[in-house]
Amino acid sequence: MRGSGRSGSSGVVYVLDASAIFVGIESAAYGVELVTTPGVVEEVLDPSSRGRLSTALRLGRVRVVDPGREWVSRAREAAKAVGEVHRLSRADLEVVALAMALARGRRVVVLTDDYGIQNVLKSLGLEFRPVKTRGIRRVVKRVVRCPRCGAVLRGDEEVCPVCGYRFSTS
Image 1 (spheres, helix red, strand yellow):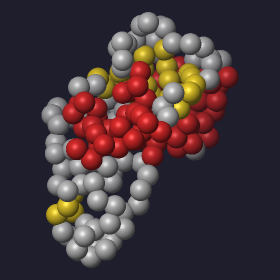
Image 2 (tube, helix red, strand yellow; image 1 turned 45 degrees about the vertical axis):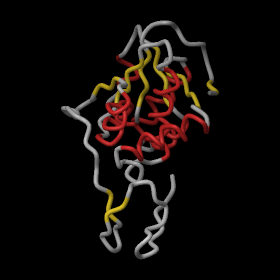
Image 3 (cartoon, helix red, strand yellow; image 1 turned 180 degrees about the horizontal axis):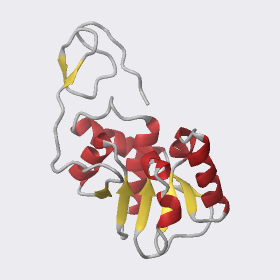
């Protein structure tokens, strides 16, 4: 796991998804460590949110941490187990991966309104807090269907065994 900026504290760590940045949480949550991933930084495109994020990064309020391929691979496996793997972007998987990596010995809370991310986190027993939505209450095991032929799949296929449709791999 590679990061920039100061080293972590032993207190609570908030992992920021793009939705937390869009509402400006990076400037409101003092007293906690704020981290995000390179993929989330790339997702923040609107000028207002981008400006707030740039300021928070420059001031050291938010650190960008790359969870690494091993953790992203673990996050992908967790997403497959609940049928979310084809719904989550690379940045979404990075958020889950970073939470998994940081949760060893620390309290980690992921700030996200993304129900797919919440579903994976809940299935792993990891904490999340919605930003503007109610959030999910229980884990949902999604049925994965091929968008071309409608075949019910296991959820981890990259190619539909019935029609050959190739799923995009994040």
